[in-house]
Length: 96
Image (cartoon, rainbow, N blue to C red; front, side, top):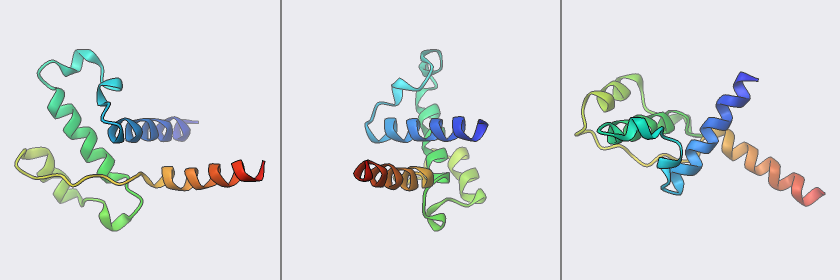
């Protein structure tokens, strides 16, 4: 149950990131003054759950990303679960 909840948060976050609607998932109380830091943390989190393990950052690079705003973050690809789940949904949809 907890895993499903976590995965749903990842999917919703990924979708909002892709659609550039991060304000939909961030508590308005947190956006005052800390909005860019919150979005940066979410960005780093999405990098950590990418499908390709080799594309995920190392712990050392995560620490650098969190400690310095001068480190440029790459664009995250879709999370691993999203890819597998999308393919399953498409297959099930054509079988129905």
